[in-house]
Length: 569
Image 1: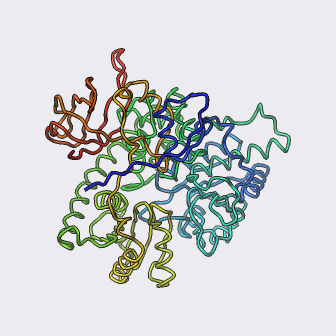
Image 2: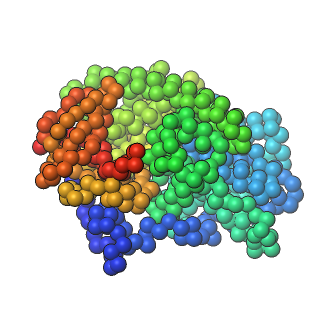
C-alpha cells in the first residue's frame, strides 16, 4: 500500500503576485522562497573560479595548446560519461587543441581509468609523453590507472564529480566539486557539468592572458549535451543544475542541437519543440545508455561527436535497435529476479531491509536496471550482481531516500576490510566489485548492516504530494505555469497532486492504458485523463495521484490529468 503525505509548504515571498497561487505553493514545498530562484539566466551560474583544481587544469591545457600536445579525453560508459567526454572534446577542439575522445569497455576494462586501458591508449592510439589524459566522470578513485599514466609520461587531469575515498590519485590536477574543502557552491554537478565548467574556466583564463572574446568558442552551444548528461545521471537539480538543463532544453526546442541528439529525438518519436527533462530521462538517455550496457559506448560517443546528420541517423537507429534488445533482456531479468525473491522470501513482508541478489547468467550491463526496478517495487535498497567471467562479481546498487548507499558500502568496508574489492558512487546509486568467494559473507553482512541502519519509517512506502487542486485549477493556464517552473527531476520533483474523481467514461489505449473522462470532486466540469498500465476500467469513483499536463491540439488547449497512482477512496 502507498501512504500519501502532503509536502510541507513554507513561506514564498511574491509581493507583486507574479506567480499563480498553485505555482507558489509548489515552489515553496520544494524549498524556494522567492521568484528569483526560478530565474534561469546563464549569468546566474556559479563562477568556475572556486572549483577545486580548475586553475591547475587550465595551466596544463594551455601548455598543451602551446606545445601542440594531444589531449586524450577518456569518458565513462554511461550517458553522463559519454556526454561529458563529447562536451570536453568538442570544447577543447573549439579552443584549437587536438582532442581525441575515448571510452573504456564496460566488460573488458570495468569502471574508471584502469592501467590496462592506459596501455591500450599508448599502443593503439599513440598516447605519448607530454600528451594530456583527461578523465571525465571518473578518475577520483583510479589510483593505479593514474599512476600508470604518469609512468607513461602523460599529464593527467581528473575531471569528476564522484566522492573521494581515503586516498586521491597522483594526478597533476583533480577538478571535482566534491573534494574535501571545496568552496564551490554546488556539489551536485554531474560529470558533464564539471567538464563544462572546466571549459568555462579555460575560456576565462585565456581572456586574462589577452585572448580576444571575438575569437573564442560559443560554449553555450554545448548545453544540449550538458542538459542530457545532467538529467541522465539523476544528480539533484539544484538551481545551478536547473539553469544548465533549462538552457539546454531551450536550445533543443529551438532546433539548435547536435545532429546526434536530433537523431535520437527522431528515432524516439519525441517532438524536440516540446522537449522536457522527462523526454531526456525516459526517451533519449536510455537509448544512449543501451550502447554502454550491451555493447560499447563508442557508438554513442561517435553519435554525439558527429557533424554529419546522415551518419547521426544511422548511429541513432543502431542505438534504438540495441535499446530494444536491452528492454527485452531487462524484462526477462526482472521477472526472474522477482521469481527468485518469491522463492527466498515468502510472504513478501519477510523481505530483508536490503535485497542482495545474483544470477550466473545475468548480463553485467543491466544489473543496475534490475536493481532500480526492485528498489521501486519493494521500496528498499537493492544490490544486484553478475559474474564478470574472471572470478569476480560486478554489482550495481540503487537506494531509497534516507539511506546513502555509498556511505553504507564505506561503513561495511571499514568494518570488514578486503570484503569489497572496489566501490564508488553517491547517495542513490553505487557500483562495486567483489570476489565471488566473498558473496555469501557480503550478502549476510550488508543485509545485517541495512537492518541496523534502516528504520520502519524509512522502509514505509510513502508518496509525497502537493495536495489537492480546487475545481477551477484544472485549466491549461495553470498547467502551463507549473511546467514553466521546471526543469523538474531528481531533488526537484514534478508537481504531483492528489484528488478524488468520478469516472464518467473510459476508453482503451493499446492493451494496457486507458483514456478517461473524469469529473473532479466538487466540480460540474469534466477533464481528460490518462491512466497508464491500468488494463481495465477504473472504479466509478477513486482517489488519484496525478500530474497536470498542458496539452494543445488542433487549436484547443486543455489541462490533462496524467494519473500516476490510482487508490481506493
